[in-house]
Length: 311
Image (cartoon, rainbow, N blue to C red):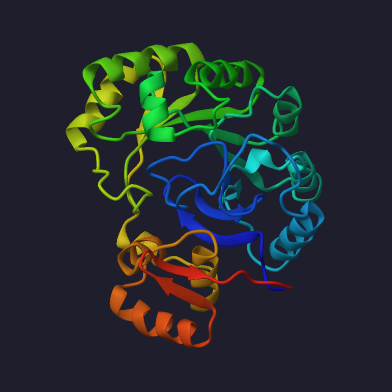
């Protein structure tokens, strides 16, 4: 079965062996974050609907889980914001009914957590990781470039409401963008917001692969430590580190399938693809040339992208 909505498994910096599930069309999201590795948002929306056919997603997921070793996590992620799909709850219920031994993770920007029906749909997930990249409205507009209906105050209130109801592990991710959200005043505001939301942990993240805006810098170890010191009174703090070369080499699928899975959900240049796949550039070049000749991928100034695959 050729896959359109399930990708990987891949080795995640945070989740171990992760099998991705993509529930929206590229690139559909309530935010257009400047650091996003899935590239710029083309459909900036807060409208929930069935963006991709969930019955097909479930069939594809079922086939994958029956024919491969079970991953550490099945992760809602991919080409946009997974909670936009109005039937995400059906996928959650399918996994929990048919593969209860599998853990579910939701990576989300949290913008839609004001919807009580959505909160109920994802309540059975084992791990939810909402992102909070801004400590005030100016940072929110500059970093996340949200849909006009979304404000930072509403976002924080909705994530807090979800955290109060949710019975499993909630980890707040903060992406540090040097020069925008890393001043002493910003760090102090983040500490107040973390105290309000009260997650089990905070993950500090910084640039690992190219984002939408080319000149974003990587946060220094000293700045990461400054954040960590300020937030530790309120919860556990983890600094997300890049995968080692040995870890990156892990794969449970063929090279072709692995590259097509990666490039189906993001556009990457050679250097970024080598980082994500764990394959040296010298080994990637002939494989990419072969995929180009077979017209399975396309090359542009931004990098390589897979053609949409069909059944």
